[in-house]
Image (spheres, rainbow, N blue to C red):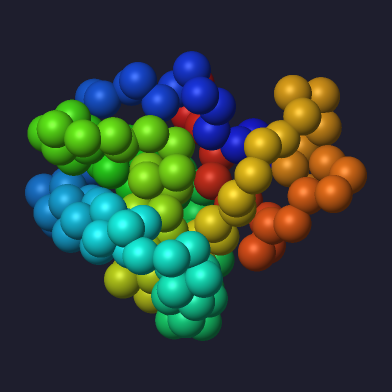
Length: 131
C-alpha cells in the first residue's frame, strides 16, 4: 500500500461519478467545520464515523474519493491541504458505509506511517495512489 503524497495534493482532475463529487462537497464542508472545533471533538467524530464503516473500502474507490475531494477543494477560497482532504475523504467513505482511516502526523519518507517510531495513528491508512 502507498499513502497519498504531498506531490499528489495538487492533482485536481474531475473524477468519479456525480454522486462521488456531491458526496465530496458535503464531506469537505463537514470536514472544514469540524476542523474549526477543538481537535478532540474532530477525533471523536472520526472514531464514530469509523464505526459506521462496516467494510474496508477498495483502494481504487478510496483514490477516487480522495481525488473528488481535491477537485471540490478547488472551489474553496481557504486552505484545503492534506489535513482537510484526508478528513473529508474519511468522512465521505463513512457516509458510504465504508472504512477509511484518518491518520494524523508526519511520516518518514523511508518508513510507512504505521512503522514510524512514535507515530500515533487512529489506524492504518487504506488508500492507494493511482500514479
